[in-house]
Amino acid sequence: MSQIHFIGSGQMVEAIIRAMITHESATPKNITAYDIRPERKIELANRYRILTLDKKEDNIEAIKQADIIVIGVRPQDNIAAIGKDITKYAQENALIISIVAGVTLAQLEKMVAAKKAIARIIPNTLTDTGLGYSGIAINKRADKESVEKFVSGFGKALFLEESLIDIFTGFGVCGPNYIYYFIEALVDAGVLAGLPREMAWKTTMENMIGAVKMLELSGKHPRQLLDINNSPAGVGMHSLFALNESNFTAGLQKSVLSAVKRTTELGQKK
Image 1 (cartoon, rainbow, N blue to C red):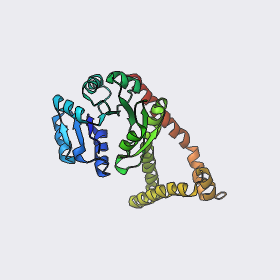
Image 2 (cartoon, rainbow, N blue to C red):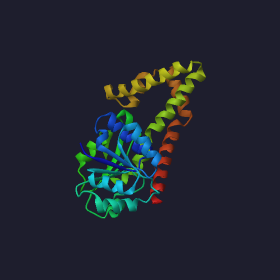
Image 3 (cartoon, rainbow, N blue to C red):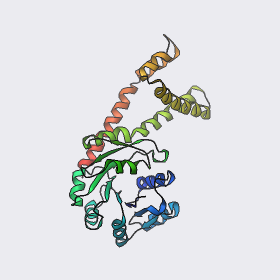
Image 4 (cartoon, rainbow, N blue to C red):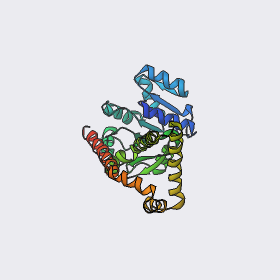
């Protein structure tokens, strides 16, 4: 297995590490993580039995040994200094991965200042499930198969043009938020109508899973299934009429556009 070193160990990095160990795409002995916070070092070591570091000299040694180096710090942190360490100490054929929002491939190439394979990954938050697409843009030196193998430890890989990264972030990566919000609202609607909450919850979850499965099995468009399910002047058509009056579709679309806009704004601040 590849030796993977994480620089920065926030919540997203922890989610990736947890998923990779759970799905056995990496073992604790193949993972190292650096964080300047001593308490974070202790937390991750205790939870996952990986080698954790909080001293710069130890971080440099880990960079030297790593086949894959993951930059997982905050956008406001000193990424340029990290780039200098990677330039100076990383193996020539090491794969450099960034999950830092708003930092482009061109910026990363400039920071690393060397002919390195670089991938920019926007991870999905569904890491524990092994589902959900992570958006990926790579430079010319990166091997697509190697990047996909890394991502497969915590989800699915979707390679795209870097110009689509912000759109994918607001739509795809934020996607679970829209689903969670919808589920919560539908459960509350069942309770409002008079069902016990546990019953409304079970029914909503079963309908959500079953509806997705039905789309997969039938190969039909959602509108086709809506037409099949709803008879003239029936209960279903009345419910859809009320939903249309609420401007549900436009509200959801505005939500996605707002998320994309904010992603772009954050990138422009770098």
